[in-house]
Length: 109
Image 1 (tube, one colour):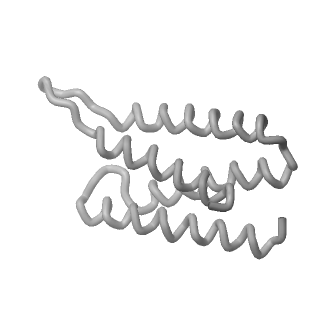
Image 2 (tube, rainbow, N blue to C red):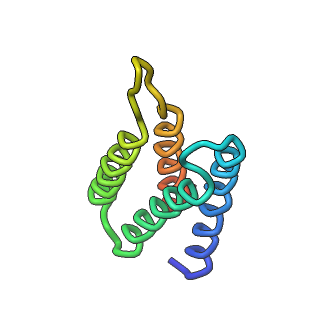
């Protein structure tokens, strides 16, 4: 894969993650601009590494599974239960979605 392709995918990941994160930041939510950018960008990087290593699709599936599992832990940490109420579900879902978008960008979609 050419360096220009890699740089474009990383830039797109930062821009899209930034747009999602900006909305969260403006609403004063816990996972804001930097967090969502990092989640999106990190997921893109892991996919790009898999492609650069020339992994077969079965191994790329393992990367996807690992990222989804790791992001699940991050999302679980964002969910809080207090006084019979559950908080942070939207934040957790946003983190999960940003990761999925990042992996899609890294895969070239």
